[in-house]
Amino acid sequence: MASIRKASSISAGGNIVVLCYKAKPSFGISDEEFVYLKKQIEELKKKTIVFNRLSHQLLFVVADQKQDKYKRYETLRKGGNELAALLNGNKATSVLIVDETAEKENILSVSEGMALGSYQFIRHRKEKEKEKNSLHDILVYSSKVNEKDILELNAVIEATCAARDLVNEPVNVLNAEGLAESFQKMGKQVGFKVEVFNKQKIESLKMGGLLAVNKGSVDPPTFSVMEYKPANAKNKKPFVLVGKGLVYDTGGLSLKPTPNSMDSMKCDMAGGAVVGCTLFALAKAKIPVHVIGLVPSTDNRPGFNAFAPGDIITMHDGTTVEMLNSDAEGRMILADALSYAKKYEPRLVMEFSTLTGAAAAAIGANGVVMMGNADEKVKDKLMKSGSRVHERLVEFPFWEDYDELLKSDIADMKNIGGPYAGAITAGRFLVKFTNYPYIHFDIAGPAFINSKDGYRSKGGTGVGVRLLFDFFKGI
Image (cartoon, rainbow, N blue to C red; front, top):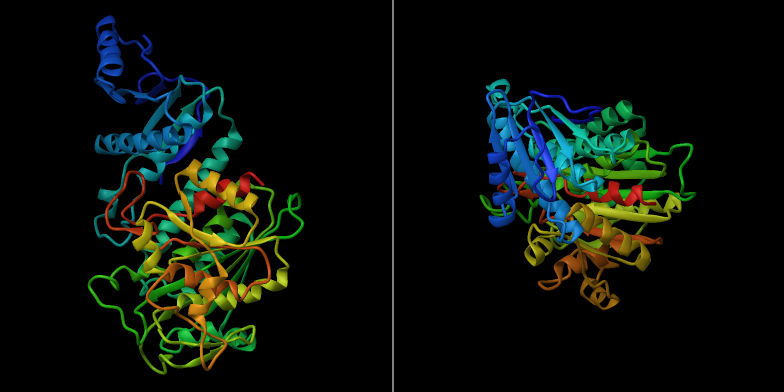
């Protein structure tokens, strides 16, 4: 993985990227080259101009000063991804980025896109050492960037890539116990607490939703409880993050069709990856905020004594649920976690899950569906964070009217609401297990993509980590 460091000087001879708003006669380019550069920028509106030297490349990246700043940052991230592809194609091991725009976010955005764009998931390939990207050092030269900026950027990049790794691992490599062990390793590495509840402990807590989904699996469930609590935390009441840890979802007895919807279901724990990897980033960057993470985990299979449509499940808080579709299993395990979260008397609970195809159908992979009953100021801050890191949020209605669709004749509620408003009824199901400010994020669309999208890798994208890190930095 490429890492970013601050450069104290501009060294000659290596690959150099000059980040600018307009052409300047700098870095030893000849008069003829400057005329060429100016024409490319001013007349042809090119954003990347390359000068090939015998031993290295000199590249000019042009930022659009008139562009909305959030759009400019995203354009520069995508430009960084293109530069990474060029440099890796030339087997370059390092690059120096020189900022002539004097705007910190510009050079950080280019660096971020370059690092994230260099991500690969090739650990299971026989020729992985030959196929590995060469770029590993990104040096930034800017009077506006300090070491804290670098620390935070590296932390969130490493965490995003770790989330991608977790999502990309298949269930025969990463089951529920393996996911919990990954969180434990992260906690030891950067200093946050991790306690993993085994099946016996989960049974003692009467987490009926998690246990019901696990009935079809040969592997036991886990419930990971993580806590990052620095001495200088700004918040008195903790923020709680809850993530869906479904390491594989066949749909259970309500079996999914394949090859369309089951092949990528190793990604159904992407919400859990967001939670664990966000705590990793916060702890590594020493962000002063108290955060607790809860991840219920199992796989959902049609074997053994798998729960069946029509079953009535008693949840952790005593609520009875008529289970009418075993492919709506995520809300069953999340409900137990949301109920458990009450013990912390949280300031806010944010839950991330690849929960519904309805959310993906509504907005595709271009954004995250959000809904909840939290304060509008909190939602506004999250919206701004989403725009800043280009993990944009779309708020769906959260009206109580939708509760009618979840009513059951024989239990307290059903686990599905019918053919319409599926993303919303899923959220309304979950809110019934809360007594605190709550926001639900459905990341089903952007969590796993079938082709590379700029610096977002094919497969697991790590969506949600950068959003939360930006939000918590601003607390």
